[in-house]
Image (cartoon, rainbow, N blue to C red; front, side, top):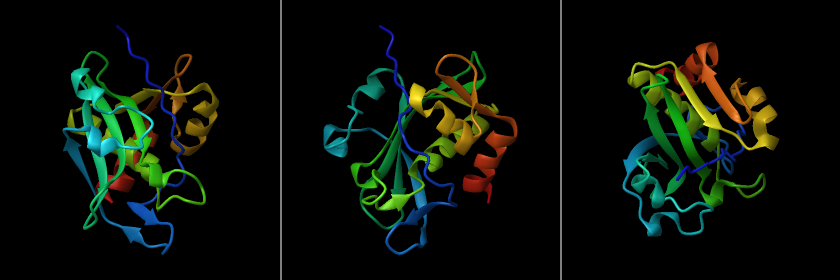
Length: 169
């Protein structure tokens, strides 16, 4: 059975890590591979527990020194296309909404992580399927290129810029 997951996350701001929306300070982050449980994703839109059974790796974005997940991304290394496929992405419920989000930059940080995983695998492309109404948004914010109906790719200069901003800067 083919599972279609569409990226449906705001790319609010490219930040060196995450930006605390209350204090305006940059906070240090860590991304960890996660064996997700239903307790980890209470109140989230997606059932993240299914990702492992689908053969996808789930990674959690956390703030150093603070318990809790700020965002999740599911990835699959696609050796045939020499890229990483971003299957699913979501900001934690407390990081959604312009007025209520705790941290700014979750979406771009997770996409940059997907690019970094691709680079570590020896590839220079990250792709994902976007909701139709967000295609232009991802073109503007991530310099992603629309290569078919909803499929978008980040490669070349845009890919390197994300990796450098978050992982080599």
